Length: 97
Image (cartoon, rainbow, N blue to C red):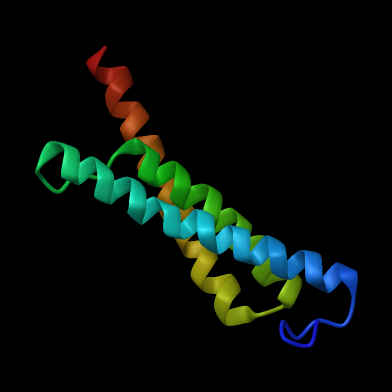
């Protein structure tokens, strides 16, 4: 527990949650990389934005728990941007169908 700088099981679970959140957020780059390799071109698949949103929301929750204003601000802007990109993608699909 001292390695992770936690004093309780609650703190430990939040650190585990934060690590999973970071893994989700990092996973978006793996998704983008695989999609680009398959198409032999740099592409950003819709899944990238879902991973971004899920990881961003999880990291935002973790930042709120930690009461870190820098982290909260950074993640809140990201969550807005990821949501907006998904909105634009689906609005375009509705117009085209």
